[in-house]
Image (cartoon, rainbow, N blue to C red; front, top):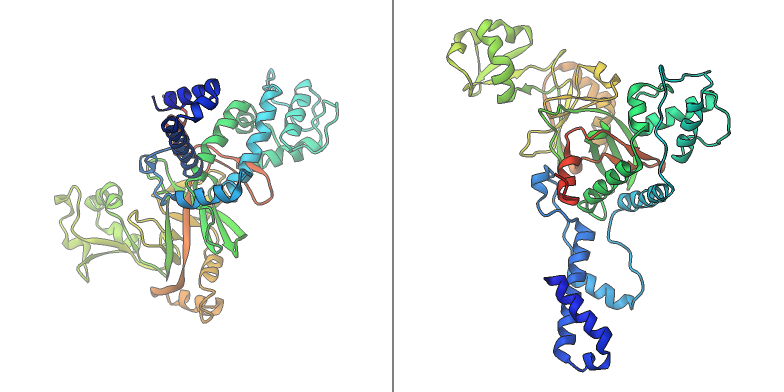
Length: 439
């Protein structure tokens, strides 16, 4: 109805010409309707089309448009194009989307199919030429020739492709690699559009010094003065115990932390073991606390509880502590934080969703030094000295450091490469229902 009224008035303006312009009421009505329609479009282009982000499990505050400032900018621009008020990551992904739309117009790319085993290095097969053509389209194979031989250049190109997909960089046509190669251009375009929608929710300018964890990427990114200085692997929450998407401010570093076990872990994992044998706690360097007092676990009748145990269970600092030797706190209502871990082998996996929701970091010592660098007394020597004591030590971070926990399944990295990842928590599918009306 709203658009129909605009269409009616525009049609009258085109057909009646000066007669329409003489009707001041109709002209003003059209101007108001067009202005309102423009602002509605600008709001969606700027801050996204989705109304309620909480339904999409996105708890980072959404940016808001200053319509008065936009109107002033338009007036001053005098009909000239104005810059989209979006962050650089949106702009980079938009350019990749343009390139993929061109590929779509050219027919996309052929599916890679073969009988029997997949070709390997040294093989000569007609499907290798198809593979090379696809890798060249995507920018992974620099030089394309007409040979059908699986040579070193194909191995290198496949490793580049696997790196962009977050797969093991083997240079081989394994099953997971083949799945990603055969995703059609339409699916990739859809994935980019969904993540561009998410990027509209992010502030235009992010803080120059911050930490950013991208859940589907399993990576922590460290930014200094607006530039990524380094990144490292992380372990995130399992599908059943998701890591929340939100923004916090890193305010405390805790050395030799106690691990205070959450109620759901007590109820689901520890309580059944305590009913069988309270000695479980001692074997795992744990203790029971009532108020501020440590009590004997054998004094508690664990069999009388099914849930909501009225005691605190915590693991003492030291070897085997689930939080390792340091945790990084950015107070939030989701009980999420960054921490060390004794389970270092998990960082060797490509898909690293193993935690109960908190984020395990692969380089905790390096991160501690980075976060505390504004406090020069906390150098490597002093940190090591405290770690040796195995006594818990809280350090206040000043100024606090912004931490973003985000969820992007496609993005352009700092080398200009387009990355894709699996929709770990199924949030792309949920968002698609909002953006595309998919069921």
